[in-house]
Amino acid sequence: MNLFSICTLVTDFSQYETMTKSFRASGFNDDIASFQFIDNSASNVMDGYSGNNELISRSNSKYIILCHQDVEVIYDNADQLLSRLDELEGLDSSWGVAGNAGGMKGRKLAVRISDPQGKNTKLGSLPALVNTLDENFLVIKRSANLGFSRDLSGFHMYGPDLVMQAKLRGWNAYVIDFHL
Image 1: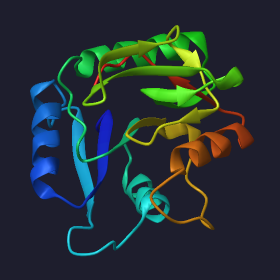
Image 2 (image 1 turned 45 degrees about the horizontal axis):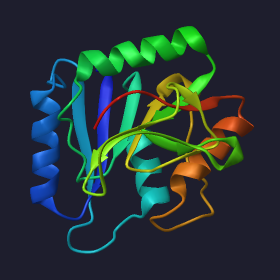
Image 3 (image 1 turned 180 degrees about the vertical axis):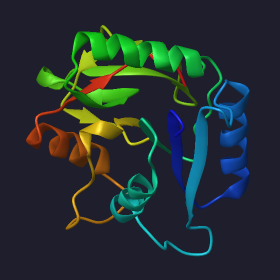
C-alpha cells in the first residue's frame, strides 16, 4: 500500500504530464505514491462528484490526494506534506480532509498557494480549521471513509460538499501550510 494516491480528472494530458512530473520531482515517487486519473479528454465522462468518488473507491492508500491537472508541486515536497499531516494529526486526530485554500467563520480565508493571480500567498495562521475547501488540492485521510454527495453533479462546489460530508461524520477540515 502506498502512502498517497494522487487522483485527477484529466481534460488536458499535457497539463497532467507536467503535474505528475512535478509530483515525482518533489519526492512523490513510486515507492510512496500512485497516480490515478479519469480520462475526460474526449468528453466529460465523469464530473467532480462522480469522478472523484470513483477515484476514492479505487484507492487504498493512507492519503488520497484529489487535485486539478494544472497543480504543480514546486515549493514543498512529499516529506513536507507528511510533516504537515503528522502535525495536523497531533493537533486534531479527527481531521478528515485538508487542503491549501478554504474559508473560515467570519468570511475569513486561509490560503497557501502561488498562482497566476497571486504569487506566494499565505493567509491565516496555518493549520486553520475551515468550513469550506477549494477543490484544486484536497488530501483525504483514507480512514475517515469520506466521499462526495451522490445526488449532486458538476465541476464546482464539491470541495465544500466534501467538508460538509466530513462534518456530518464527525471529521474536521483544515487548510495546511503546503505550498503549491
